[in-house]
Length: 594
Image (tube, rainbow, N blue to C red; front, side):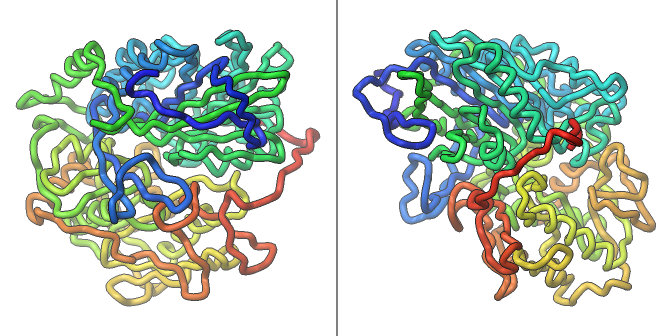
């Protein structure tokens, strides 16, 4: 065993039953890379001491720690180590070509050589952010996919005009003496999350039965084992595991969950894993014994100096340094959209007294700081942002320009407008409807809208649809539905002229600063307020009789941050993963859209 190897546990059947027989050989070892988000070099990440499952880290007396790790050189070294000892099949879920200043100002192209040379996936499945460059006049999604050496799989991605599928829905690979059917399904919500990301070029099939159909086709082509690689999110995939009996193993991505313990769906004997974001590497060993598929699983967190983390790959390090070099010059001079990179990425732009991160559901210190910066820039009544839940972390100390771009790697301009109180409350209610639906297939975002620190929200996840927002307060006063409020936010490419910040309603008195991007605003705010001291302040709370909502994995059961609610009992609260039903999909009347 290699010095960085680990005991990854006992063999189990797909129903979860231990099947240890003294034979530790695997037919095939799957490695899963997901949600890389442009992570060329190590970044900091927050890890949680979850009550039912946690990473192999020393938490001491804390319920969370911030560690530095990941990056292409460490990832490449770990993959090489595993490939030297096993028949490895590397599966990659998308959101690769977005997530840093380098991906932003190169339209994602900077990731091509590092992925092809050092990750070398057997298949690639696009993620929602891989389409982000389609917001530009000449999008390059197809060019990025063509540049990959790996085949691209997406059984639900169609050309809008011809209605033809752009990529194969599955592939049968011969690896480790097995015929492995790999089904690929891209994110189903791209056209709803950000219409500009596809500009009418693509249609995204949304029905989970598409997954089952591709799996059955792969079995008919002789597959011994069928795995699915997706970028839709863990709640969706757990429900799909209950509904799609032809898939043995599902590799999930998009919601950035860390399944240190795999999720076993006994009803269909299907296993679901999700492999965090970028700095983690999922591993699933599979074998077939007497006709039975058996598995074992481990999730590596490639933290620097970690017990199972090898030394960085020297060739990968050299490639990454070459890619990064132009962005570390005194005057990089890159331009895109409303943004200009006029200083090196390692320039220090501020300081923080507390760790900043946003791997949370209801509220995060980073999102509050971001909104406060927007509000201060425009001197408005409040600010609102998307409440993104992905992202790395910034430990106490210096904040660099590169750090900021990992939180907001977009060059869209900032904007302000005026909205009625009723528009604000309706907008918040719509997001609560999305997040607290009992149907996982309707859970799109996995994050609640975030506001500046002068806004407080009370919600009730157990209330009926349309009644989950209990109160929205601005400066301690309940929002008046007939009053108008000035709002700071941003302009998303392709949105209607008066729709700002993905709010979905027309603002009045819209002002867009075409030469100012959110990073510029945050830099100005940090220059004036550093060192900043932001924490979770309880700005989003549940009503006393409205059920419990966990903000982070440290606050409740694993693995879901976003909850579901069982409305059949009217008031009973339950985790999404606990919803017991399966869905029956009638063939008649079903189409590829829904």
